[in-house]
Length: 141
Image (cartoon, rainbow, N blue to C red; front, side):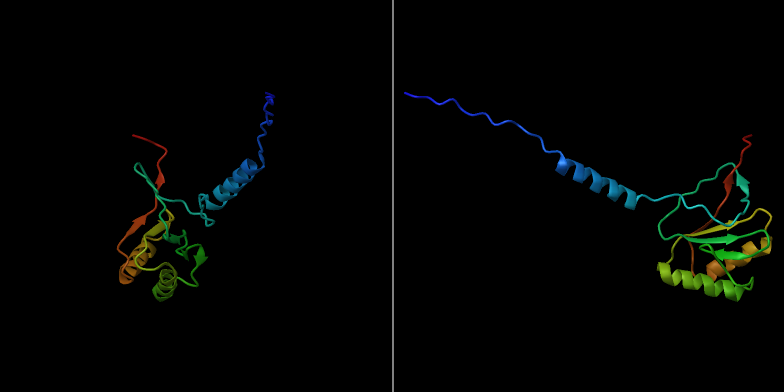
């Protein structure tokens, strides 16, 4: 009997599909990564010993600078009149949907009346979930 010796195939590892998958994962993670959004308007936040900032999805951000100017999501409101702020905030709410969280970031030297006006307008618009942004105090007692 004539037995043939079995031919052994050389095992070859093709890395091309693995590299393709790694590049696709890299692109996926780059696209889905969220970055910290720093405000372009310079304000000095009041300090507290218990500051916690948790940005949520669809958060409406209202900034008040030291001169009492309002900024809704980084866009300056035309003037300091409550009616103008009401219109600007209601337009921003139309883009977001029903009752998004509101973060009021007021400069520590801003007029107290500006902050109260912003809180009053938030109440008139039916916003019940709002908070005041502060920064962590450097001194711990």
